[in-house]
Length: 182
Ligand SMILES: [Fe+2]
Image (cartoon, rainbow, N blue to C red; front, top):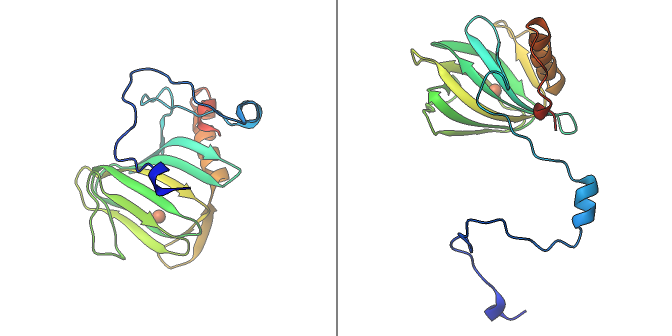
């Protein structure tokens, strides 16, 4: 291939306000085996805040049982701590409101800040903000929780997160939103 045929995109090639037909050699395969996208609106009818202890709640957004991936918003409602835990997978988080930090590091995440944690890391989540924090998270793999003496308590994985969501829905007569499952 000559270099003259290479395009380096510096901006979207179309800003047309229309759906464009895209050529796809395997469109029928995608139709048969592709997994539809999902959408969860902002209302509590689509996914409620489920209590996680007296000062925190989780709004579940996605459960992927094939890859042990779960996505949610963690809300710590006022200054507080989510105790020390170890991740066995990757954590991607964005701070939406308030602020948070890990006792192990010296940075503080405010709105818009991005956090990436890798398998094996151990950390202790703290918010010193009077209004606490809301963190969007995309988490993969088990999370092992310890008490304040360093005694292992439980492993939280996609099954724990599904059970957390579904038990709350059952107890409160809420429908299970199938959009959360991929
Ligand atoms: Fe964590």
